[in-house]
Image (cartoon, rainbow, N blue to C red):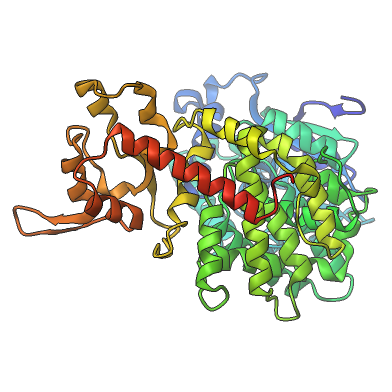
Length: 579
């Protein structure tokens, strides 16, 4: 990696020799260290400085490694990418030492006091140290207590303050008092050994992106900065330019709260997921159909100036999109009708997440001034993407293959056209063969997708809660197949005709493999103790329970044909079959 300045430095050298102040930038997370981390640091430093509690056992050329500090120079300040917690805590520790040294008259203590002054503050042209001229500053936008950090470094007062900074500073003050009481003759040695024998590894990168890459490589314990952290900083800078930073901070906090409740991505943060969904809207506006998707940060970075994040509409658009998905997640009946919510429930079991991207584009384009969308058109759209995504998962497995048709439809949405997938229609004959021969293993996401869609083909099926967990139930139990060996084709136990959604809470035991045993769980029953056990909310299971005395291989095959016929008709109804 080019243009890196790496040189191990003692604490004293790092703070005293730097031409530039350290800046904890606005996109960093708030200071997070508590008493446990401070106690560990104190104990480690004490054990290093006084081996076996003996000042004389210390070896002068021994060093204690405190860790790396990753920075890059930004407008004559060293912007800290990694090492925020260490730097901040070291400054609090040095300020606590300085407080105690201030009242001491011996020459060693005076020299230590002068050394610490040079670490915390800059001198004016007369060599005088002004407590307002700090060598570290924090601009962390979401850290409401950062002013207390600055105040403590200036005046050395932690009493009456409630922040983490104050609690940690007071912790060090108490530890220093106890240390001085127990080891009065050792006192000046402790700050001396921290300054002169504790080392850090400052790594200065040429750019923010390089610094972030280094941080991700080095740091296997800390939490790396997310794309959203970088975006937050850009938004704050933009809104600060016309005096609305505080307003943007509150908006961001609300977005953080909403997304944390709604999105649970496998990779990245909930806020990253929101920016990803919004990215597809901006991609569509730019008529980008390419199946190659830029990395999220790279997309928003643009020419390097993050132009999308410096537009007045962007933050409000993100809020609208977040609230839309919040209402989807909460199954908000004031916003969506029952028929819309049922379709959204089915899509929540989609074989991949592509539906969320195209639905985000649809909402952003079709919403009115109240962020509402026309119900009937929305239902047609949801039906069409359900039919296509389900069918495509069987003919072209894998989310990557879905990009080409879906990205093209996103652009059509922005042009005011209906979603039709007209260039990707299915041959009915070929599709029937593919779905009939497809192996619907439970490990394949499309299996649960199909049986969820099928559950809602029953007119009387009520809306199910997104909070309810469902499993795939084999109506004809696999255990029964193995024990009775009564299926002419043992693989029929795994076809769609034998599978149905069932609430996880019903937890049918493997020993209850006979149909008559299963029915009581489907319908509900009263225990020997008189306790009522509710049955399944899946309407088809109630119908099967009431209509069949047994569920045989013939019933599996007939139900399988019915599901396939119905799905092909669903494709036809959405004009997804070739003429």
